[in-house]
Amino acid sequence: MEKLRIDKWLWAARFYKTRSLAVEEIGKGRVRINGQEVKPAREIKVGDTVALRQGTVIRTLVVRGIVNQRGAAPVAQQLYEETEESLRLRADASEQRQLGNGSATSQEHGRPTKRDRRSIDKAQDKAWNNRWSASAD
Image 1 (cartoon, rainbow, N blue to C red):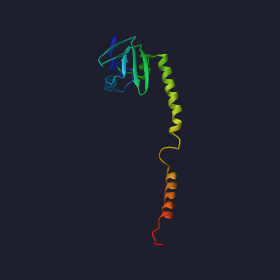
Image 2: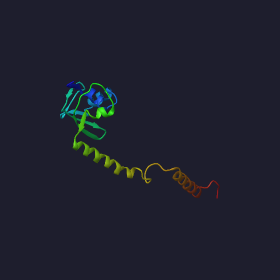
Image 3: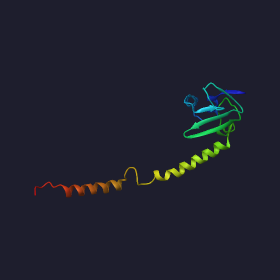
Image 4: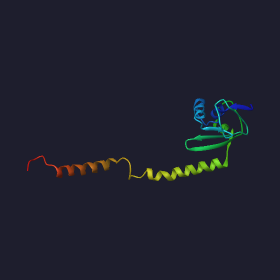
């Protein structure tokens, strides 16, 4: 088999779980072949360069094989080779995500914990009792 539709190849190479998801991503313009936006029926051949965006990361692949059926993951990984630049960019993005999580997990911002809510409620109750009086002085 020399050529195959891009949506079938992306499905067989296990980039997307279903062909319809692959078609949807292609329709959104997230897949390019040799630098050009494509339609799902576009045929690819061995040696083509495929750039696809998964989340915020753009992966650049070189097609090494074409298979019509979806197979095991080790077989699917032999259908393409990721470029060195793409691997480096993915590693950098992964490192940035790990470094960026420190501020998100801090307790300074966000919802108060149960203990914090109780202390806030106690402080408000004290302020209410000191400020207002139900009895006439």
